[in-house]
Length: 104
Image (tube, rainbow, N blue to C red; front, side, top):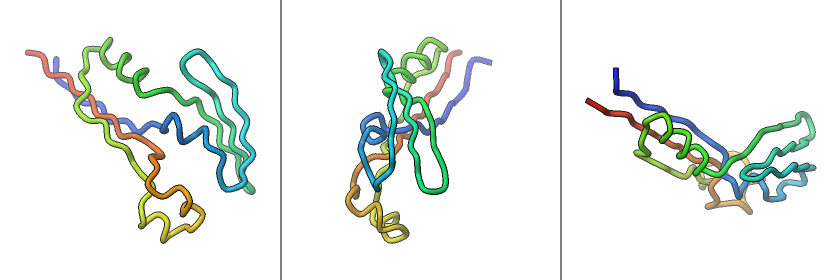
């Protein structure tokens, strides 16, 4: 079968470098990505963050084409649920990336 679709949600490269809400943040930078550890009161979040182009390149190598790249932004609804995001209103936190493969 030469058809398929991949949908992934990835962190926004710029957003995850922003100091926010008093979190303690530690970074390790690599050539085209970085690892971040974000210490919150009750938990710690660690992840590797890449630019969207890294996902585009990997998808292309697997025969997929980018069909959609949609920012997931901090909107009024999120701010209404949690006021700590008020200063970040309108910023992209994540991206939805959709790739398709449709070869006959």
